[in-house]
Length: 145
Ligand code: ZN
Image (cartoon, rainbow, N blue to C red):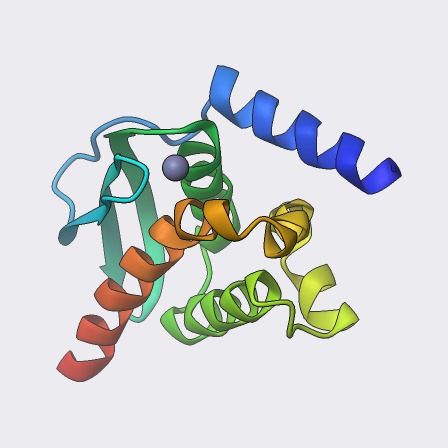
């Protein structure tokens, strides 16, 4: 119960007042993510300097879950190293499959509120859209080093 209230609050808050939904100036990476099964689209924009995520934002259209999840994700990864962000992405994807440990879910802070999505198969692709797009960018960044 407490958890699902938290879930609703977090989703509503990030939809009404997204912190990171805008274009970034001079991003190092811009990558489109699409979830055709729901019609969600995001364009993830990142600035990476010396292996640290210095800037991040997104623009897009789609359901509440896809947009809120991307906003929450960017809030979490700003200032993190590429390795830390990749490990968070793995934890998030495991959580959505219902395979994450308690510790992993805690390490995801606010994104842990989306744990309930693991029980909503139709919404899984919405929740992971931003994280999959992030992983693709970060793997490119790792390949450069
Ligand atoms: Zn969706």
